[in-house]
Image 1 (cartoon, rainbow, N blue to C red):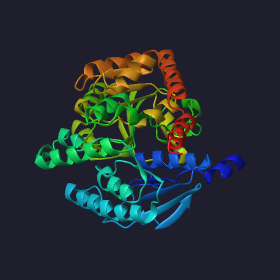
Image 2: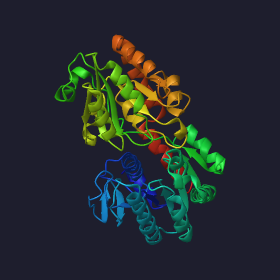
Image 3: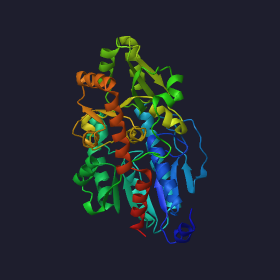
Image 4: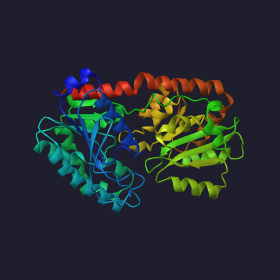
Length: 416
């Protein structure tokens, strides 16, 4: 921290962030929150995070109740630990975090603080908005996804029932009453406006990645590519991160099936999620020998793991546009790789891909177009390389880590 930042921090409101997962957890929301809070602390803002003591993939993990990281104070509250294996267990985990984080905010927040509430668990802004108000603190809703609409779109019946409508009404009230609401893309901004968030209090601040640590690595210079069994002649189609209920797998599997006899193409999946077991089951059932799976990689190895593929794919069910925005986009762009979007071609990522010329977008089920594009990119490596350069340029001009943290600092300064 600079001397100027230290001298001014005493005059600044404290930022109190709440999310179920935080450092050292590796989940996407945790990593983004870790980077934002550490960056703000480095700029002189006093920052505290309230999170749970469990891990995203490993609910049995036990992080300490009090901790600190890169100038950020951490308060971790006790919760149930059923994990993500069942919807009932997950719901119990949610409720327990609502309760313990509510009392943590009552204990930690002071008049004039800025309480920034993320969306894990869903609807967290409802109880914590009340807790912040009771303590005389300002509230900021940081929307990473929007519930209960997301749950309803994924087929959860209770989310489309009167209970879901009551939850949506409470959520809308929290948006109306919040001092600010932060959204991560144009589609989500449109949703928030439709739900009643005042336009003057809306801020669009994109997610990002560590674009200094993640740099493009040429296949010939990447030791991980050979270690994972890929040859220089392989054209690797990659996916990195969580593959869950919000994503489409069928189109990619169909393309892998068509290309299975072609020795040029290999498909790499790195990560986990609800659909990972289905991917492995389907690969065995179809006799797909061109699919390789690897577990989540440590953050310090992301530059190498994201650079193993020649091209990446991401997906989002069209009915979830504006409700979710896959943040894996930013790591792919940082690694300088083309991106193939499977979902709504007119959605946020589809529009960015076209506007900045760093990939292509496909409707779900259009495996034929996906196959033709993969073959074309494999046969035209100069075009693939140019798309990768455009992807990195998109990141550097639209969502640099330094610029996004400065936007968060500017937001907090509105309360100072």
